[in-house]
Length: 620
Image (cartoon, rainbow, N blue to C red; front, side):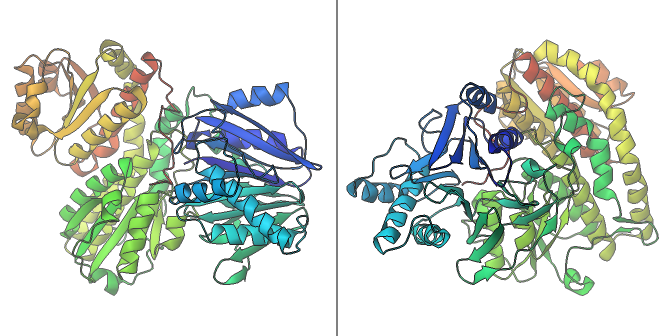
């Protein structure tokens, strides 16, 4: 979850490193640091806290050079502190590295290195890697190798990496070989940028935007050796590789705030566009179905699928629940939604006619990747639904679908959720038309889908009403979110948003489950938020709402425009456009995002950088 940047070339490296860390801060913001090779020494500046505090430190104590690495941390081993901040030095300073990931055997390695005389300054597993590299370099020098030679540095890295168990993405500087920068990955993402006489390293592509449009995504067990004159790529098992250079199509406005105060608010307001992007080129009006070019399966193969497993974490899991409802309804294919963190360790019975869909915004989520690999190992067709081109899950799946939502910077996912739901709706239509759905039904869904971006644009007009409701309830410390059928996952997602950025306890339930226990929680200090648009079981949800009101609990309702019945019962109402029942999550989720946002502001919480969280969960 940490953010890594690196550079070798002709620029003053500090500027790029600090700018890159600002762009990567959503990956971790407990502490930050940079290291710059300058002549016969490597200078480190690091500090607990946000990247801005590091920038101030560098302004006070400048450091210059053209080779360096940087890091913004999400703490795993050891509390946030100056000592635990990256970069870390190995040996007597001959090695400096930054690391993302978790080294599972760090404790045993630390004991061995301490016995060899190495002294540790931090509690991190990363410092173990630094000392291990220093010892490996020392062993190479004992064999007669020169520490100033690139081959010596490479050999030291190769030997050290073989002793590590766990996930790592590392970038390494060498005091005695200042013209070389080495990067390696296993389980933690790294992307290389290729410029004109310069090379870049980053945890994802955002720091590279505006510097280069040619990138190489490192695969597991690959090592990149970067010098001012070139790049070599090696794989642990197959030796030298020819880099697969891809075009980076992001632009700087994708990662800038523009006129918005926070990235989360910007991304909420981008949803009419991102939903439209998710549908662009994927609607076949003539055949009343969806079009997917990346599934890499024939129609005949797809027709043999008799079960679908959707696996995901967090917000993506909630989107998968919506997908379960829709695929079973449209295509009559049994669907199971599995937490990826559980699926990776389970051994559920799955036939060879089971398709596995991994759903992830980043394409790097550690648990989702592990679950996908386990299912692939057992021979199941594995497809991915993700947002990041070139991500590990996108590359390793047999096929998949991109969201085309653009970079999502806010830690709390918003536009990725509605994009995932949009694509899952298209997949449900696709499988439905392949099986039982009529042409008329397919045409109707397509017509209604085309209207959704405009409906979401209309929904955003509720912002003033939501802000007023937030002012009324922001002091409450417990919320219940309630919905049924397609809106039950929306209730779960709304509760998660409130927890993530407002630090308020909230739980999502199917509304009918209240009388099976949670109704005991109702009092005047526990608001219940009902997602109750017009639907086939609308009277049932109204009945559930009345049960809460009868016990004195405040009720906030998300309802269709003009719903006088809800207005009579609820204390506060947020109105959304009336859309087809199967598409309601695309509009009902928006006011819940806005409510969490405004409550967070009123509680003086950091909206884009909530405590203890990071955007891309690349560790277990």
